[in-house]
Image (cartoon, rainbow, N blue to C red; front, side, top):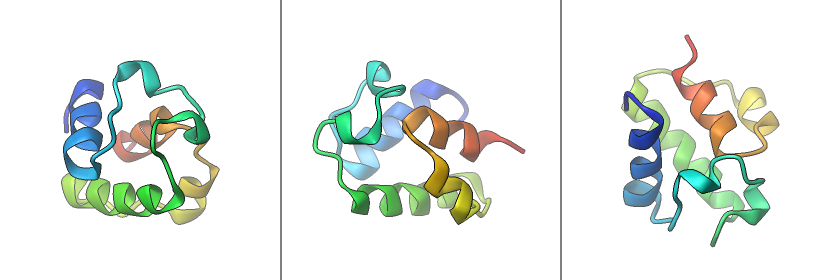
Length: 75
């Protein structure tokens, strides 16, 4: 996962959500078909893809997909 477009593709393919780049700054409750289990699944996928452990308190502070992307690629 090198770009934000890779991230969107990952969310669509691995999590199965019909998201586009337009959904990145939408609050989680506005993302189509979003529920809290998607957050857990997405964190697991991001950790697998990046080889990094994400701070769970930081994950819980994320308000949208873009926040999660920035957290996953920060380093």
